[in-house]
Amino acid sequence: MLPKRPRQYANEIVMMNSREERLVALEKVPEELRSWVRELAEDAYKKKKRHPIGHKNPSGF
Image (tube, rainbow, N blue to C red; front, side):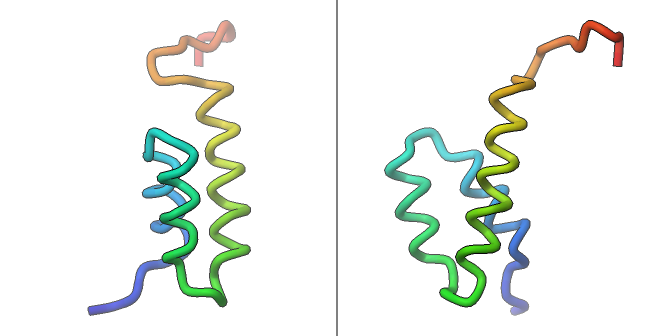
């Protein structure tokens, strides 16, 4: 079985409901990938907060 890629870890972390769950999941990421996954997850989480599901962009896109 191939190891997960950083974006896969980040996507799983972003989908979690609580901050505590996200922190525990981040601790389970291999140490050599952890800072990269954290950066990807933080970026994805900011985008998720900015554009929640069902939100229509005023420009129509």
